[in-house]
Length: 104
Image (cartoon, rainbow, N blue to C red; front, side):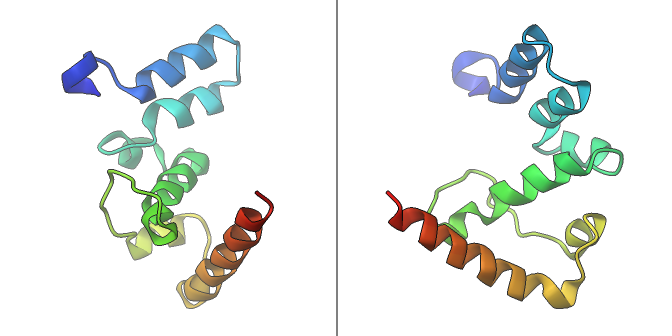
């Protein structure tokens, strides 16, 4: 995006959110959910971390995403998710995603 358009979807999303007078927390999530910014703001805004993790698990559901990053243990922990529960949570998400896909 940046090379081709000279701008990113993060910047555009944040600008649109400002224009629409969305809450500052949403603007932050839209503007900073990709590295390197995510590490700077995730501690003070858990929604940033949540969106970033959501994008990282997309390939597990057959959805190509450009992050290619593995989820680190500290990222789960920042969201208050016990590492012992991660596999069960991912399985539940996978099952719900399959159910949603059947809805059409």
